[in-house]
Length: 256
Ligand code: MG
Image (cartoon, rainbow, N blue to C red):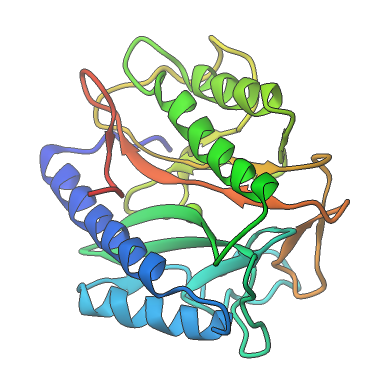
């Protein structure tokens, strides 16, 4: 179901959005070579709690037989891992890694969702370009995140930009509406035809999230039931914000 948020609900969405924004300011400062992804996870959980929120992903049940509940507070995906990496005390972040973090915070019954790919230490030029293109593709998409356009306009703009830069988007996962539920309608693919899909209206809140691969778009799921990696072992990056549709320009809720 697509939900249109009331004024009151929008205030609550802004509040949880700020939690996610502050969390990323903290993680960006603290992420370092030698840190394990579990340490990053623990820092994220502590920070969310200090900000009065809960990690919504912890214990998330995908409702797929045989797939365990997500055990951690954030997803941490390194290099060729695209999304849904599970933090571990055995996974040490190395100089030169690109590390994608995806977080959903829950406060006062509302969810805020954002993802960033961090360059740890000095990364290759090509890795930095992938991070930059992924972020820019989000901004290309939200040029159409306003009344008068449709979901397909956002999807098309993201996909076209990514492809024009020589990269791929994954097709199996997509952005989504967000509010009381972490995942609400509509789905927001990162490719597609302009002029198609749901018409955008003020009060919609959308998690728009390009997941971009350096090489071919094919992905694999690891045996842990969660981690998604690129099939050709090329690098992947992720950039996401929760966005409010207004009468005019969109408002990004997960950046302060
Ligand atoms: Mg997310």
